[in-house]
Length: 497
Image 1 (tube, rainbow, N blue to C red):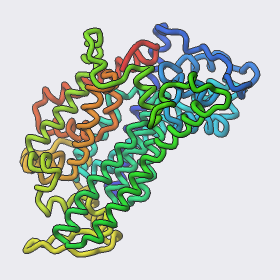
Image 2 (spheres, one colour; image 1 turned 60 degrees about the horizontal axis):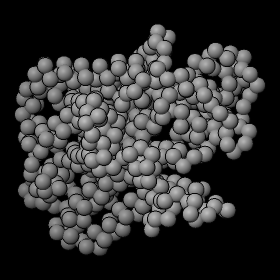
Image 3 (cartoon, rainbow, N blue to C red; image 1 turned 180 degrees about the horizontal axis):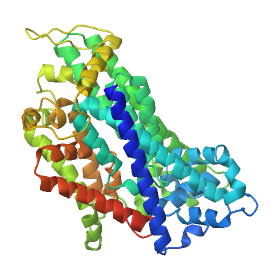
Image 4 (tube, rainbow, N blue to C red; image 1 turned 90 degrees about the horizontal axis):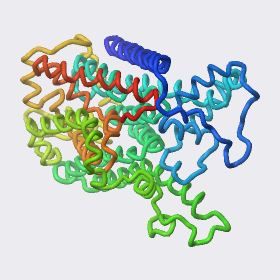
């Protein structure tokens, strides 16, 4: 019951946060004039006559919705309406436009004569992403309880996620909500032993954003440790080989959406009949024709150190808070657990590893004996049942509040909470994302690029508990300021992250 009450509380907070965001968007749109009014421009589809209705009954309402479709939202709505018309539109992955199109043709189809087709597409995107955000918050809380093993810390982290600095994108027609839902859902199922479902979630995250393929790294990390134990501690090389094959197949499944979409782009752009070879786009002639890399480099100037220009200094300043929080979370973990971080986790204690739910997900679970190491095969159902019992006992603790100082000592010893072994693969994942955001991407995008990384919120939750009040105020001030700025600038077509 305690676990259910925690989930209900997180869902309630997530819903309230979305209501606040939508209200702020409407408020700023009412009081301010958009910087760029081109959001209303919508030329006919190139492929023919699109599905359009007669003049809507409430054109003013439809105009308000269409005016809120700004920045990348324009691409997603246009793709949902007309498909992939131009080469650069292939930089936007298909799951959001597909779901928008399906929802507009089914659930919201009766609204087309009232507000117009494009307005219904935009409305479908708003509803879809806000619902996805609530589900993502629910999965994030459940994942946080599993990993941190502290419901109070998990609740604090979930509240921080509900009011994260990139909140405006989670309530707009962007892919952040869907990506967070699929990533957190995949991680939760991975940590509870449902590997097949985790693969499906991770594959769907690859249909939402290109960095979804990086989620295969969690399986690789898991397999690396299972293989090591199978060979050197259990003397079972056949089982190790089996785990390697399974990990490769899972990784292929996670990569397949990205590969399939690149293949789809190649077929539509490079193999059309009547196109001369000289007129083909340069990437079509490459030995490995990778569309996504070409689009990012050619149209958006993305590349290693290409954004390091003096004129981009304001953007670096805009991204500095989230980058600082990410770096601090990584550095603090490295200071407390250098034995784990620099050894890829192989120097951690056996008992600590066995308590990490990440390693329960193999077909063989390791059972630790205090007198000597004994590894026995047990069914995954028994393991999951024991884990659920342990979590239920943990959930009897208060669901929200500040921990006492003695608990902070356990954190510093690395036995639980933010400095436990279970956090390690997340730290590696966050390190790669932070490096990419700072050195390769348009750095201002870091605020939303890193917003679906769990260690950001777990570390912030740790800071709120064990550091001075000033640090906690700084975190909340940063989150609140970017929510305010985001709703003000982004919704009125002003530059933001």
